[in-house]
Image (cartoon, rainbow, N blue to C red; front, side, top):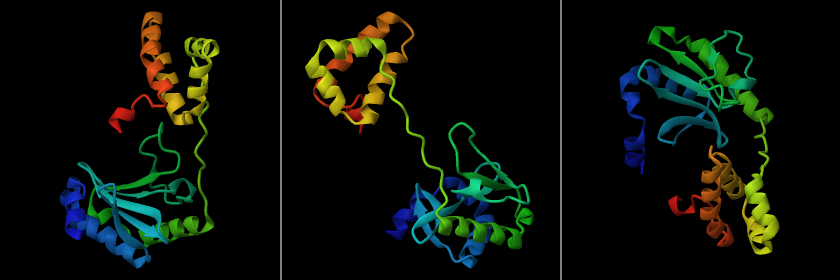
Length: 194
């Protein structure tokens, strides 16, 4: 099992082997538990993700899963993806000499306290907006309406977004026609790929 996990590790980690080992040593010092998730090194506290360590082409990094809650007094954390990331924050390094062991340990210990406190950003519930064409079809066909209501909210959104994302009215109608059978069968739009 360990051999399989090692083979799944991010390939970029080999570019920063000594640097990543330094960060791993500090995480061990903080009392975190090392594991591998999503093919990368992740440290946990009581089974909860606290920090990941990885290498990329231009830098190696710590990413704090709940970094948004850290005080970041040194101003070192960045949001790597503004549109998609609410809580995660990265601390990037370009050279081993940039790693201040004491400061990294301080951030790790604070991240553990954040986890102990149970702080988290709750995911926003997405509202399903039913396109007019689909709503009209649902209003006209009780079986279709019942089948649609029995789909999970995720599957309902898949159909709605697929139909509504078309630019031309003809394409929307075509997509609607193709979706009707799947809805009646209780299938999601992309079930065949799952």
